[in-house]
Amino acid sequence: MTPEQQEAQWRNRFILMNLSRIGATIVCLLGILLWQSDVFVEGGSILGFPIAILGLVASFFAPKYLAGRWRTPPEP
Image (tube, rainbow, N blue to C red; front, side, top):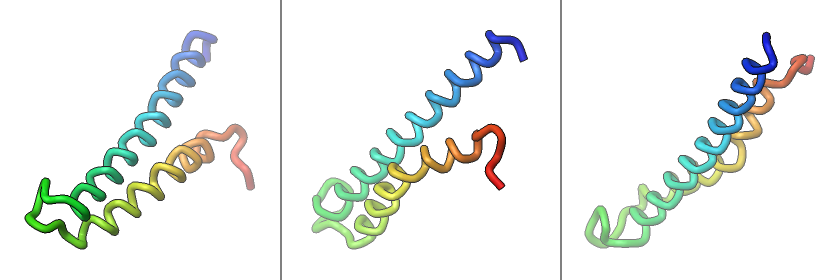
């Protein structure tokens, strides 16, 4: 792999890690909006709580999971 290809690969991985964190944060915020406000459902909905928790967990652990998948060499 040439240095340019390695640089492009790491740049793309960095972008993907940040997009996963941003996307999970948006899911968390939408879950909070669903749970606590009248934006989607009159009076809110309890379904927003687990969606918010899943988005929060994903925002913390998705980048760590991706970094582990891309580790070279893989850990035994």
